[in-house]
Image (cartoon, rainbow, N blue to C red; front, side):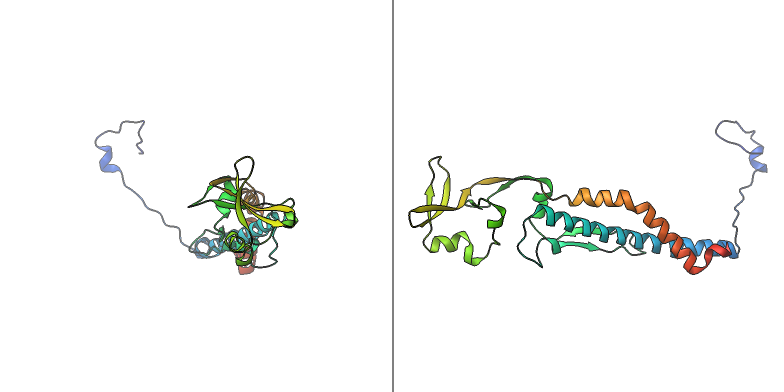
Length: 216
């Protein structure tokens, strides 16, 4: 006799009830347990790591297309890294070592910690130079450059070349940074588009490799 929440059982029925625990154990069940505890986690970890690597490649490709990078190695692209998943930690990470990347991902206002932000003035992306000691605002000011105020009241660092006055940097308390980095969006799309098929393939490969398919 079975009792559930919808029926009221007679008092004496409790004396006739027994809780039975069944455990099915066989060679097949041992193999299934082995698959669940060993092969499947390995396949999942492998898949997560592969997807992270593919996302890393796609993010770096996007950076090449959207950012003007003069440094051929060790620059923004190489800062996009991954942390592989393991069988005991089924989490893979895609991350960047670049401190400025967070604002490039979200867009927003960058404020000067003190003084002013020195924003380079250039007419084309080809004029962008990697910031170094030789072309920093302080180095220019220590040379023949000087601070001025434009007709609109904008502070700037300028340099005179013959009769021409060249603006090197605009000095501002804050600056709007456009969103250009799509690291989150690219990684999310890569997971959505490729994870299921990749996992299915890795699970099948793991089972075939161990010969478990034919035994079960």
